[in-house]
Amino acid sequence: KLELLSLICSLRCSAVWARWTSGCRTAMGGTDKSAADVVPLASRDFIRSEDPEPHAARKQQILKKHPEITKLMGFEWRTKYIVAATVALQVFMAWLTLEWGWTAYLIAVYFVGATANHSLFLAIHELSHNLGAKTPAENKLISVVANLPICIAYCITFKPYHMDHHRYQGDVHRDTDIPTFLEGKLITHSSFGYVDHTLRKAIFMFGQIFAYALRPCLTKPDLVPFGSWLALNWAVQLTFDGLMAYFFGPKVLLYLLFSTFFAGSIHPTAGHFLAEHYVMEGVTETYSYYGPLNMLAYNVGYHNEHHDFPNIAWSNLPKVREIAPEFYNDLPQCKSWVGVIYRYIFDDSISPFSRVQRQMKKAD
Image 1 (cartoon, rainbow, N blue to C red):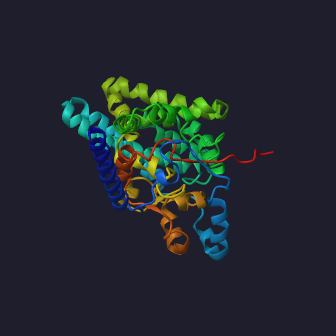
Image 2 (image 1 turned 30 degrees about the vertical axis):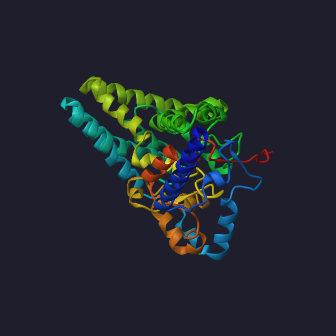
Image 3 (image 1 turned 120 degrees about the vertical axis):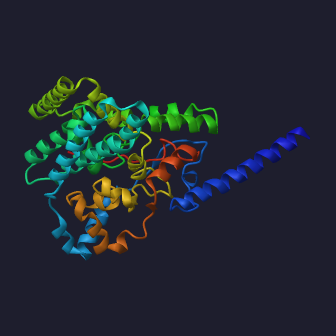
């Protein structure tokens, strides 16, 4: 009787959980087809694909039907001014909050500092595509300035890894945006059940900035672009950090470092790290988000559009969808960056393994 009662309770809990997760998917703009329908919980492995990444083919189809999209290509002149204003804001806030109590200080860090630094992350992303100025050198110089409030030089190192993410999306050997098997093992394979799995995912999300910062350099150190630009990036960054500490005291750097940490932690804008390529519906591997947070994030939510046309600047990405709605409106979308963080943590079918992997032919 006890075994029967335990079985009935387990089945009821499973039914409640299924209804709850289905409601979450619906609220977040999804369907009832979850990642568990593609990768059973027992296997907990990456989603393997033999197909090429979807963006190159769709780009050709769109250009064939809408050749006028080529007029949208090119850099956005306003980017450098937005970057300068954001850097100035962070320097001002770092000084302004020096004497604040911890409660007000942390509120300012989370809502102003982290939002501003995440915006600078995405400015550097734009500049890595040479979309902020006419020449690659000008884009690198602007990105070095955008890097300043982040406190750690990374903008020059970021570019080669990000270019490979576009060229080889999902490639197990070259796309460092995909979590490693070790990350999946530590978070998912070795977990002891739903509660433990949920806690591990929450801890990962809290400190995910470290995974995104360290994973590329640790897994593919050969891509680090040693040279004069990297030296300049570090020289300018260390000079800025030193001058800030000299004139305002070491605590001024704490505001900037906390801003960088929370910008890549459980923060609304950081939801795009998950929303872009984690498989949430069927086997779709890239998702766009069309909500208001794009205003703070250089329209990075238009991610299908960005991967289809990486040489179109942030200001023109919405026009891509306006010109070619038949290619985008029916694709699965992310309705909420906050919601996708919540779902990643609490939906047991979502894990570091919820990514598409493929093996692409090596370049000659």
